[in-house]
Length: 116
Image (cartoon, rainbow, N blue to C red; front, top):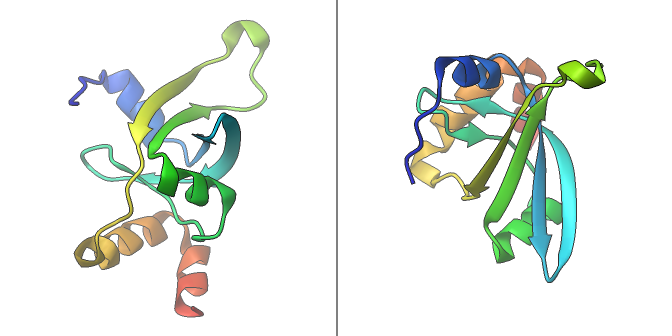
């Protein structure tokens, strides 16, 4: 499903780097904070281990929700973005491009990827 996103929301997403990912399986909900990066089409990318609870959940139920917000906001001024999405594993042929994009924002991840 293609959704039109305002420039204000696009800028908000691009200028943040953490989100909360919510997954569910068999009626049990799990929320995980993650660093993320987006590409020009606003596709979200993050790196997680296959044995993490959120990935194990998503392998059985790819329907997820994302929340992006700034901490330390006053209650009356709170802002954020909530998104429903489908989670999918990056295709092997796209992996190097996505890792490069991700490591541009999170240099410390390059060291972790090199050590694996």
